[in-house]
Amino acid sequence: MKSKFIHPLWTHIPAILALLAGVVFTLKAMPLPDPAPLHFTWNGLPDRYGSPWMSTIWQAGVLILYIVLSSVLDEAWARQEKRKTFNWASLFDDVTVAALATVHITYVNMLASANYVYQFPWVLTMVAAAVAAGIAVVLEKMRPYRHYESSLVIEDVSQVKAEVDRIAKSGQPLVYWEVQNPVYSRVLAVVVPIFMVVISATAWSEVPWLSVLIALVGIALALIYGGFRTVVTREAVVVRMGILGIRLLRLNTSDITSADLHSFQPLKDFGGYGIRFNKEMKAYFLKGDRGVKITTRAGKKYLIGSDHPERLETVISTVIG
Amino acid sequence: MLLSINDQDSRPVYVQIVNQIKEQIQRGSLKSGDELPSVRELAASLGINMHTVRRAYVVLRDQKLLVFRLGQQAKVAKLRSQPASSEEVTAAIGDRLQELITEAFLLGLSPGDFRNLVDTQMDKLKEQQK
Image 1 (tube, helix red, strand yellow):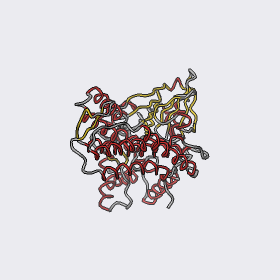
Image 2 (image 1 turned 60 degrees about the horizontal axis):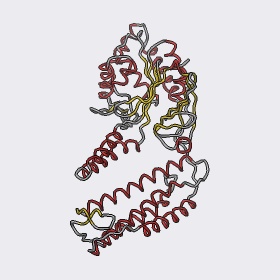
Image 3 (image 1 turned 180 degrees about the horizontal axis):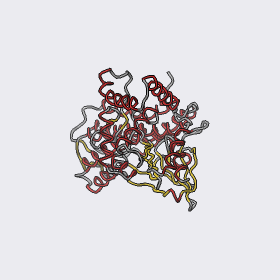
Image 4 (image 1 turned 45 degrees about the vertical axis):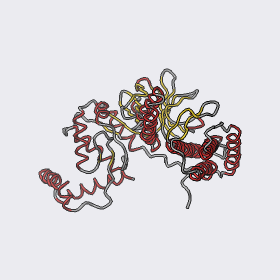
């Protein structure tokens, strides 16, 4: 069966193996002492004790999150490739997880030895990260190129054009509305804030200012729930974000000189998704690689990502006359 | 989703919204799972009362074409894969069909003319769906 992933998941093997090694070493070291030293001075002496499970579970959670985030990033990279290119970002999870798993394994070994002096394993960590990076480079080089067939098709908008023309001539109020609300943005707006609020609650007694900061970032992320919405009326083109409908962009139709279909590479041209800038324009998109480029009388250019760029372009072009 | 309000149309505004959304679902411009604007956003964009938009959405929800709960974005419902039962059809469009047939009769149309009219409209819809 052909995988629906363009970037093969086996490129994450080093990170997964490092994670499994951490789990195996932890299981072998059981039962862990409770309370166990959780924090150490520069000299390696413990200065705070607590449940070893809390830190172990959090660490495993963070490592899994690294692997998932890296997989998403790699997939996004692979989908915009026009030919095989080396993706340095694919090394991100392998290096990070290998380093963190090494730190955890040495910590668990120290707990098992009952000699609670912990010297940070700089050399071992760097060696593990380097080995993981080496394997990851080989796997990334071995990764085959697969062309991504965009699910977006060029749409026949003659019917929409006729309808918009009719409305435009009649002088009736008009509204065109569309949304970009991909699954990952919903996860970012729900799962990550919950995760951050839980972290914030557990960190409250230790560093209150940091836990408030984490909670605020979590709440800010929750505001993107609902994605980006583009609304076109006779008066303006408006892009809003999230559950509160925060206005990101408003362009009066009288200020717009042109609206054109535009294809782009999200990572290469803008370095990611969301509200982005490059030398030429400011862009608003959460998915896809097509949209509408709007030019204003002042010469400014804006890109609005769309799942139906032909429709959006037709509507904007008609309302600006 | 494209909507407009026609001041010259004798039908209430909420009926115009209901009909336009239905047409877009029927044409395939709006698909199952597609999100619709919030009541507040749509009302502000069209310059109409929020209650008018809410009423349109409630009508569409009652006809199982939209799903929405408090605090959630309205979405196009999963369209039925099987034709409705004759009882459901009678309940949904029986009375309106009766009204149309009566109006057609009063306009002097024969049953054959009325059938032709229905066929012509059906052909138009099929053409739009292509």
